[in-house]
Structure formats: C-alpha cells, structure tokens
Image (cartoon, rainbow, N blue to C red; front, side, top):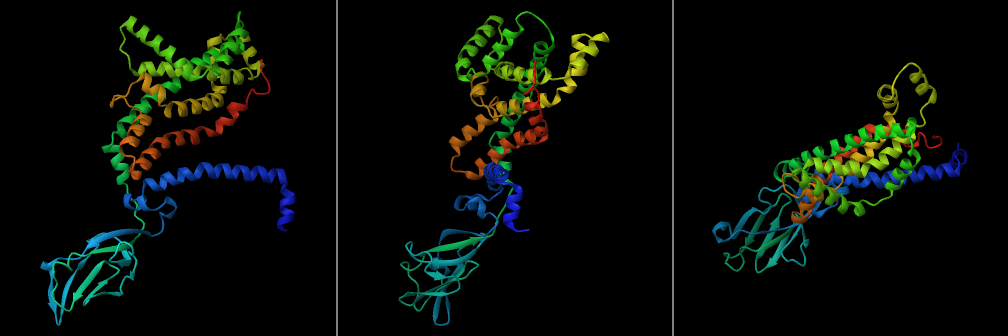
Length: 386
C-alpha cells in the first residue's frame, strides 16, 4: 500500500491530531531527557558542550607549559626538554599551537618549526619533545602551548553525591515530603466528606454552598495569602502556638486546595448509580457507612486524579512554603533549597541539573503511577450530575 493511500485511510484530521500529540510529547520529554543526561555528565564536559553530545567525544581547549631549564638534557647534537602536557588527564590531543590566536596551528604528531633552531613535537597522548640546536635559555623555556583535547564521554554519580550530601538538598527533600504528603491527604479526606454531603444529603442551603465552592476556585492564591497569614498569626498568638510550623503550612495548602477538591469529587460522587445508595439505605445503612463502604471505594479514580494535582502543586510550591514555613535551613523545602543553590552555584551546571532532576523525580513517579486514573476522574460526572 502506497504512502498516499495509507494517509487517506488514516484521515487528515486524525493525522493532524497524532502529529500534534507527538510534538507535545517531544516538547515535554526533551527537556527532561536533557536534565537527566546532564546530571550524570562530567562537569568539565558539561561546561563546553550540550547534552546531545554526551555520547560522543567532546573537544575542549587547554593550555600547558613546557619544562624549564632544570628539565634540559642533551641528546646527541640537540638539547631536549620532554614531558607530558596533559599531566595524567584523560583525553587525546588533536592539535596544538604556540600562539593564542592560532591554537590549532599544528596537527598532533607533526613537528612544529619555531625558528632559531627550536622545534616542538606534541603527540596525541600529550607527550612532547622540545628540542634546540643550542642550549636553552630562560627566554625560550616555559613556553605556553595551547591544546585542542578530545575527551571520551565521562559519566559519574559524583554530581548526585554532592547534591544529596554536600549541598543540604537531602534535608530539603525530606522537608518537602513532610509538607507534601499530609498536605495531599488532609484535603482529600475533608473534601470527600463534603462532596458526599453535597451530593447525597439533603439540607437547607446546599445549592448556595456548592455555588460558593465553585466561586472560591477562581480566587487567586496571592489575593488570599496575606489575609490567611494574618488570621493564622492572630489565632496562633491567641492560642500560644508557635508560628512557622508544619501544621500551619498543612492547613494553608488544605484551604487552598479544598475548593477544587470538593468540586471535582462532588462531580464524580453525584454520578454514582442512585440505585446503590438507595439499596444501602433500605438495608439500614447510615450515611457514614454508605460513605466509607460504598462511595469511597467507587470514587478512587477521582481521589487519585485530585491527589496528582494537589501533590504536584504542593511539591513545586515555593511561595506558600516561604510564607508559612520560613527560610531557615532546617525547614527549607526542596524548591527553596534549589532557589538558594541557583543563586550561589549558578555556574555549576552539573550541580543544578542533578538538583533539578532530584526535584522532578518524585512528581514523575507520582504522575505515572496514578495517571491511568486521571482522565477517568476528570471526565466522570462531566455529562451528568445532580
């Protein structure tokens, strides 16, 4: 079958959709792949070449000096100074030069005639032979030589070791987990009870309460952050509770996440078969038993979909964490630690790439472990509801 017939069989709209999805996936995967590869690269190679060259030899420019008068020896009619310009470094010399404006003037393994009876030979392994027809003087020793050195791909775990042990990221990683897990579980528990009440319990003002929940979804976090912080400090002062605690940030994230959680779970729970609820009531089950034994197990897709949103939001949060938890080193979350690291180690790309991948590793694991429930939880109840 020809390509034209295959395209006609697939259909142009479907082909456009498939290509669009492929482009979106590529745009999402490529930066992540780049961070992953860069996080394992040697810092010297990472500084001079992009991550897409990680699996091929990279070339860097270096400079070395020839030996001094103490290294001079006589070889027949010549005076010779020899040694190695790489000094044990990994790599192969491709070219060399004796002037900064022409660092690749001579191929490695070829002899350069420097005039006045001076000759220089630099081999691929970095060894050199500097010869003269007359004894060397201080004027023609210690000469600077420029090298074009090709190095094989080098991958290492040192970057991760430095990040997790020497940069304080390990403690910040634990702090982020301490914040994110309760700040995800608490709003789910509260929202599940509220969603059930708004779906299957009849009480006065239910419609107005649901409308208020929907309205709170569009309230910007920045607008409510300062009033919430003032209220939190006033209540804490009245009760004698210290500020900047984990409990405070858990409550803050719970408050910010509840409107969306209630709305999402209510749309799902209200779409459950009415016959199941009525049969349970006929059998004498109360609201709490119906909720725990029937509604919760059936609502797992919606719970999982909200858990993804809430966990990713809390894990990547910096503003709320700095306001309610502070910037002390022992309480700094991962995003705060990376922000501080970016300011102090902005040129150390190997540290930043390893830190960035550590920060996205947990969200990636959470997303891929729960992503099969995401679409089901979002779409269920979208075309039917009470």
